Length: 319
Image 1 (cartoon, rainbow, N blue to C red):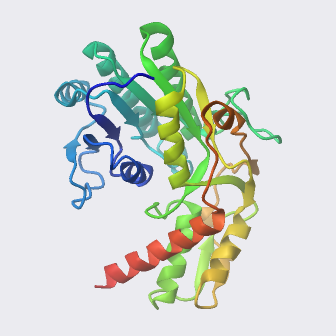
Image 2 (tube, helix red, strand yellow; image 1 turned 30 degrees about the vertical axis):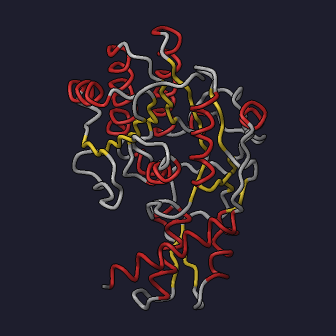
């Protein structure tokens, strides 16, 4: 794509993937970072142009976009929890769908050249025993998946109906440092770090360990976002995944091997989901063929770095 004038905007910049994307884009100033008012505060060590913007407030979005006048927007903001979506259906639909609509509408009304990457999800697809590619039917199995499908379709409609320059990423599970303990790998790592520090008894509480999930390091995922932003045709969706489905219990065992103490494992019924898809495995052939992306960080490194981060966080919280 030809070079565009104006800063790069990242929504959801205070979040997990957002923070890693800021790392990746650090040498591509100027950067503008949006975060949710009342949500996770921005990192004060990052010398960026931070703005608290409520994506559900269309007037606020339009004004903030006019002020920033970005040439690229990485839209990462949104509700990200599959398990909690069963009890927060309306909230997730509002955040993921109406928030995306507000942003795309503001871009349309600005009438400035601007490329937008919308982060959808692999949860938009129908369950499959085979690796999932971009032609797999879009039949989500969870309220979260439904909200991401609506977001995905808004992005496609913006290209088709409004002729906006919008590209679509569909990441599968990803993990790494800074992830919320609401997700399995981060939860395991946090519990281990607290047990090692003597803050909790040596019992690690888990959910379904037999589920198999395609897992990619978050640093590889944000690299894929950049590749898609720079080279993808408008409206063409891309899976981001490793192509390998890991058993959750095997990821846990790898982390236990890294621990400095012996830890028991106990299944916690509260951590089991109402509907848990047995296997989710992706196919990133399109992304690899079109844009030359492939994952670089081995899962062992992802687990090691996540555990080390939680060890440091645990030590910091004690002081």
